[in-house]
Image (cartoon, rainbow, N blue to C red; front, top):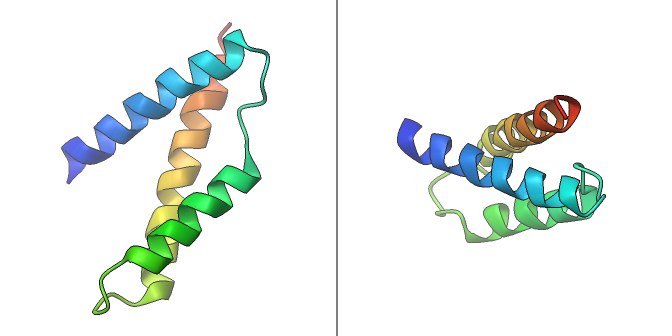
Amino acid sequence: MIDLIALRVEYARRIGRIKGNRGLPTTDRSREAEVMSNVLSSGPENLPRESLQKVFAQLIELCRRVQEDDYEQK
């Protein structure tokens, strides 16, 4: 699971670089809401939605911080 999180963070870092090169903001609340909606609608029935939301909220926040930290280092 940690390897998958690390991979997701690396993708977020790459996306952040693209955003930075194009002058786009690192935060996209509508995209974050879309990701959360997809997670909650496609998650297994035996996982409580509230728990899924908490886990993915933390993952989204981690990815956002990585992008913001990279952007600030430029």
